[in-house]
Length: 275
Image 1: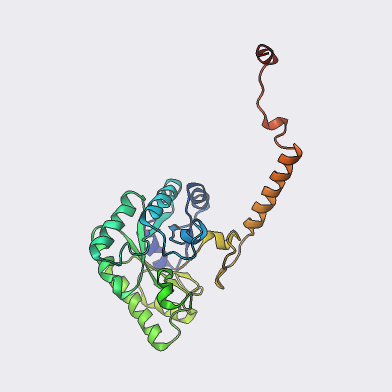
Image 2: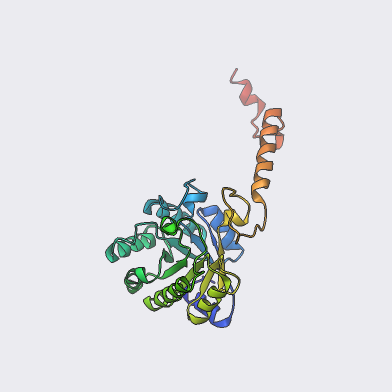
């Protein structure tokens, strides 16, 4: 059954945990979709794990549309959410609406995600009123790392915690169907989850949230530039890949690959006529 904003809300209401993973291409999305993940996030984290940028700031609308459309072709049941990249929505409500529309029309998204709290509520409201589902994102918002002074846990002081609670309430009021909470102490994330009607998706926010999201290269050991504390490595696919590539190199160099079973044949009479 296709996951929708309605099935997300039903999961929250019934106390069922939601699962979300990132993906950036057709093949990966198809694999995750087949095993039943509720949602696939085409995150602007592709700037780090796919394009090799140091942060997400340089990611463009064209990047998100290109990768989003590929994921959408592979995901039949998962809810596909595409990130709105830096400066695609902060400049004005009009820009936010136009760019959200592009992610839906060209990227084939089921929903869009944007970072921020109270300050982006006018954008969330306008996008939702246009018929586009919005997932909010509060706490450690990677597009704002320059303002934060790096990747730091958010909400540790009373003032900061109150701001996050306000952000959560306001994005819900603006019409967001869910909110990602990143890099926030577990007890604060629990409080936000209890106070909101909409589902919360945690990443580095403890297991009291209504669901969880991870960057798949992190949880599969495929990205080693930086591994946050909140990541659990469920498999070491990176090492499996390196071992396989090493074997490929060795077999090509030794002549073991390709073997006879990998070759095509032609009748000898055809070849003889070529001499």
